Image (cartoon, rainbow, N blue to C red):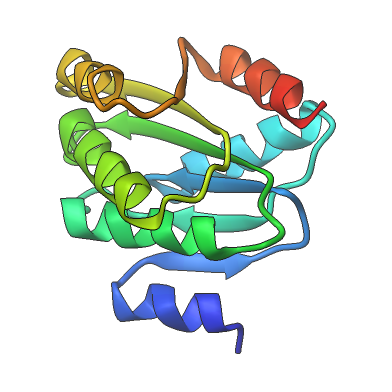
Length: 149
């Protein structure tokens, strides 16, 4: 079993290691499949399937991102969240905490939509970290492609 998969399991995260270079964090299996298709349409390959689930906490998001940041195959990270139960501000706080803690500079494209999206975007913008925020899924794919080239 892959050590990253074992680590993810400790935090109740659904993670499967794949062979690509784009790390993915999503909430929901359907969104995960759509996100992986989007990455392929952009001419890249997903490095993983990581579904943090609908009820993820700040700690779960943080640990999930730390797993992506520890994968040496990952060149760009795409976070694609539709906030229903998982609010966008919760996601943003977890992302910022993980990025501060790990301090590994991998470009990140973040697409947030749903509950508390404006607060989530504000947390990212005020974090002193550099994130590429995407307006929609097509924009996210284009930004991932640009960062890989």
